[in-house]
Length: 205
Image (cartoon, rainbow, N blue to C red; front, side):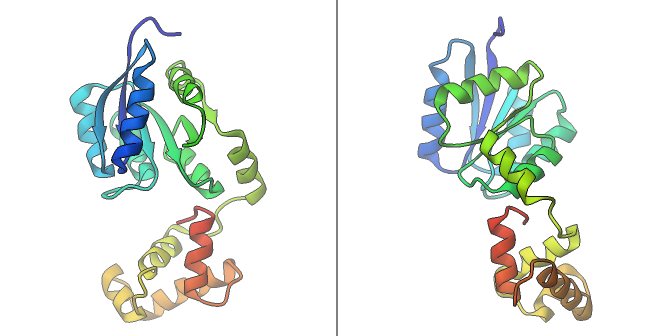
């Protein structure tokens, strides 16, 4: 237990979920939610403005994902502890979160007491990971896609043609085709749509 109040930032785009989390954490004597944001690209400014101790972030947010926001916070404000919350128990998300500097990774349906305890533990220097997700991540193995293959697959998710992807990503059409072909082969699927679906399900995008 800490002898001072832990200042927490909540980043969650669904207002009802964010307010519920804030209310639950507000019941704890040693935790205070000092800032709330609905976008990933608002996290760093809010963290700086409120001198927070811990940031609790959802993965799926507009502006920037929780993982991207965590990586930025880890670089700019390394003393801030990072807790990633997700509705989706995807093993790839856990690996990405840990690589971004996250100190904890929990699913949203965890008990409120567990979340509060995770806040205290990360501030004490511990790492907290949902055990079911940890086991799944170990079983799943590493993301086989390179950064470039992930980038091209993400861009292809909206159905863009190779020509459109080449223009957007500043690559040649042949290069785009090669990246997509390699990703499709690695994921053992028939086409780019299936590759996008599988990579998303595993949390690799």
